[in-house]
Length: 91
Image 1 (cartoon, helix red, strand yellow):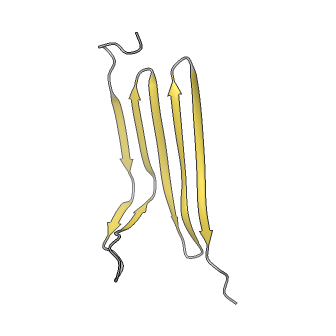
Image 2 (cartoon, helix red, strand yellow):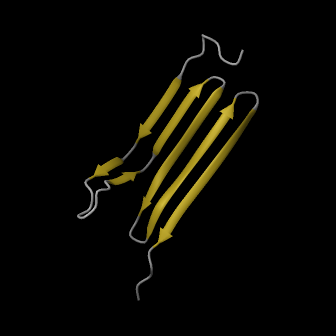
Image 3 (tube, rainbow, N blue to C red):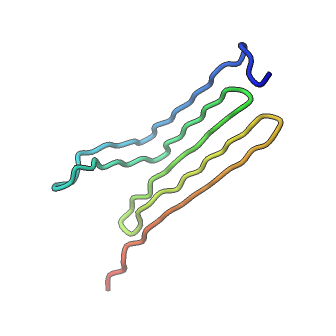
């Protein structure tokens, strides 16, 4: 049997420095900023975990994130992505 009644759901959500702000003037989209946002979901034998960090610096904007899926005693797979847009240099 893949799951049994004795299995317990384990869920962790970490919202370090999550900020929601009002939209910029003329926009309807709220401003969102997240650093250290992480989620882990475990229902044996499956575990899914992921994280995202927003990059919001004067010269760079984007995100860095990752996802891992593991099935106990069978396999695990991970994915990491980073997307960054650099501001044009002045001068």
